[in-house]
Amino acid sequence: MSEPPTLKSQEISLDDPESNKMFQPGPNEPLVATPAAIEMYTNETILKCFGVLRQLADQHQGLDYLQVFEAGDKPENLWFIEDGQGGAITALLPSDY
Image 1: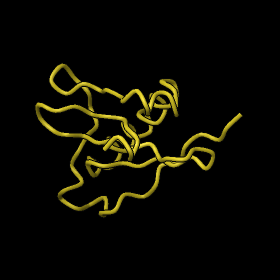
Image 2: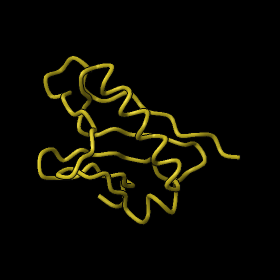
Image 3: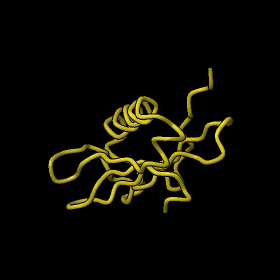
Image 4: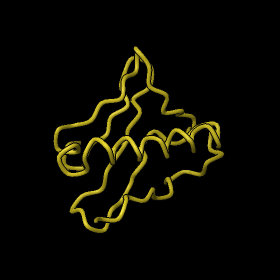
C-alpha cells in the first residue's frame, strides 16, 4: 500500500491577496483530471486530495491557484490548478503542463 500524497506548502503566503482561489467546482468551473494524472494517482486519490484542498480553501478563505501534492513513490507530483471564471479546476502532472 502506497503512502497518500501530501500537500506541499504553497509558494505565496496564505494571506497574500493572490491566495484567493476557493477550489469550488460548479457548472462553469468543473473539476477535471488529465488521463495521465488518473493513471498515476487514480480517481479515488485525486478526489481525496481535492477534499483536502476544499477544506483548506474554506479554512483560509482561499489558496494560490497552483497546489502541489507529492508522493514519494510516484515519479511526478500531482498538481491542481484553478483557472478561475470560465475555466476549470484541473488535476494534472507537471509533464501535462
